[in-house]
Image (tube, rainbow, N blue to C red):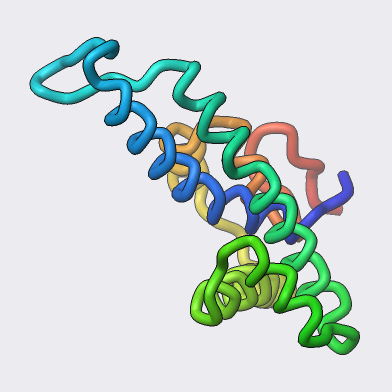
Amino acid sequence: MAHDPAGQVRTCRDFRQLLTAVQAIALLYQCQRERRDDRVIATLDDYARAYSLLASVFAAVAAFAARAVLHADEMTAADVDTLREHGLDDAEVFDVVLAATARVFWSRTNDAIGYTPSAAYLGKSLALLGEPLFAALMVGRQYGPGAAPDD
């Protein structure tokens, strides 16, 4: 299975931003939304609206993160300016770089020392995250359901 470290980092970072946008949109439409225990319940339309608002930012962050991980020595101020054009400030650009490079560093370190998480940890992680996000967060060797056995 081919790995896309930047895409995996993007999934984690973008999910938080997407949820924040969904919450804001649901709040704007609160008079038209169901409530439970004084909480506004977001709809699929809220998620769709949020994604359409953020899609270009997500794509720019993903491309930047991929370049940071795969071609850091070729990056220029123009790469940073692209994210600034999408509304990110210097601290947020730095966060993208740290998230992308730290995730790859940690995964490669674990691979190099042969670390294998326990079955209990994998089970809890899979149950908490669900299969799509669990799979998206995997970088390096695969663990858990569908993983190729070690030789």
